[in-house]
Amino acid sequence: MAVIHHTVLKPTKLELLASWLPSRPWYAGGEPELAKAGGFRLDDPQGAVGIEFMVVTDGSGAHPVSYLVPLTYRGAPLDGAEHALVGTMEHGVLGRRWAYDGCHDPVLVAQLLALIEGRVQAQAQSTSDTPDREVTRSYVGDGFVPTDFRAATDDREGTELTAPRGMSLRVHRVLRPAPDSAAEATGHVAGAWRMPDGTRARGLFVVVRTGGSG
Image (tube, rainbow, N blue to C red; front, side, top):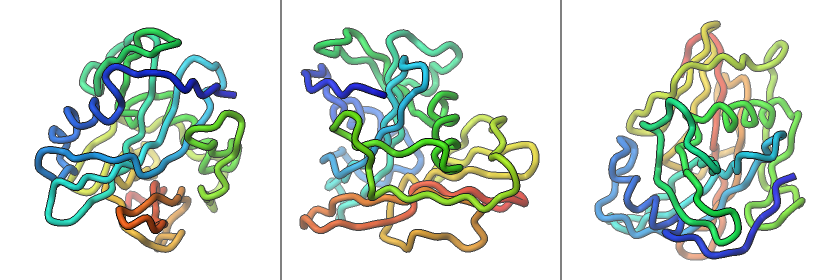
């Protein structure tokens, strides 16, 4: 079980993301004006890596846009993942932490697959040992989801990971309100986030497909 520390971060997560987001092909804003809008956590079975799926809303464009940013927090650099480093920050309890784009971190990918299969439960973003009941998941495939997903690739809407047997795992970076399902999907993760007017929206966070479809 991950323990949530309510402490000071320097720089803050939003400050890190404001520097990093403009480098992403799926980011469509200008100079980021970010607000935290929701998200959830997953537990690392080894207790070493923090795993967070953060939703931020950017108000820099003509219309606010919400983005899903999976992040991992580590106490030391992740070998071979320099390209996925979002930044470093000083944690008031844990010391220096390396924050990574979680789509490139094998610990996050493994736990995301476990969530899709129903083997683990989404946890509240800011409260220890509290399930997040707003996060839904499904999996209708035969057997377990493959674990040998290849390197993540970004496009203008999200991030795609593919497995050798024709299965794809798509992380929706640009969030839009939608039903908790997707056509011809083998599995999904959906959740809720807060809109700028205070209402709550729901949409797909992650979709799994087979047969090479994206």
